[in-house]
Length: 259
Image 1 (cartoon, rainbow, N blue to C red):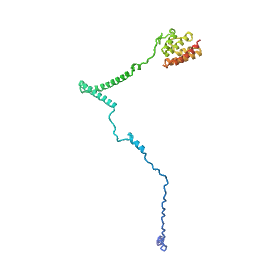
Image 2 (image 1 turned 120 degrees about the horizontal axis):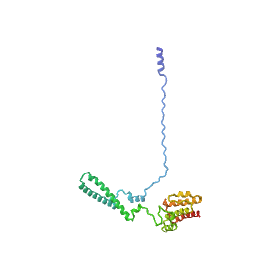
Image 3 (image 1 turned 30 degrees about the vertical axis):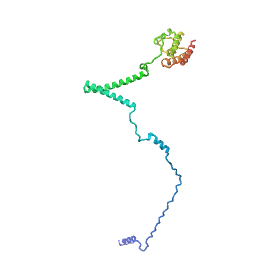
Image 4 (image 1 turned 120 degrees about the vertical axis):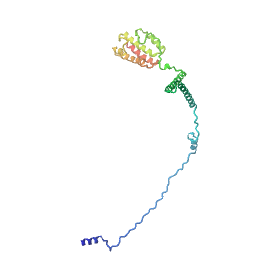
């Protein structure tokens, strides 16, 4: 035990005979900043006096001017209209209150009369505008067609009772080219019937007559004239003098197949 204590003291005790450690002083090295000269070229800009004066004279940038806020002539007109309207409705309300009293009947009647008067005013103004421009309201909803007197009724026409040359000539005189095309087609049906190539009946369709033709060339030519007729008559295809001459050429070509 004593030996252990002696060894512990010997090891933990510093050496007395050794000199203390030297302390080394460190010197701080300070670097002086290097001065850099700015060699860039500086361009001095100035305000454009002309541009400034132009902006000063522009009223859009003058926020201190007094703006005329008085109503225009159009605004004064509508203010007058609504003032008259309000006074009139107030007068109507007084009359209704005297008639019906102050109950719910008068309150319910005033809005009805109000909208009735507004609707009447709108209709009256619209009618006056149409009359001013000479527009007939009935013609806007009714399509007018040029009609001429022909010796047959459209729905019960009999191709064997029509004088086609005379009827076509009358239609061309009044420039009713649409009717003239129809007469050309009916004449073609009569030509086919007279040649015993079809069996004509009023209730038959155009496609039925096409299918009755046995000759291929005749059938193709008749299909062409049928298509032009249906475009003009049922499709309301516009026809003028030039287009009628163009369509008439197809009917003449079809007529040549019957010779």
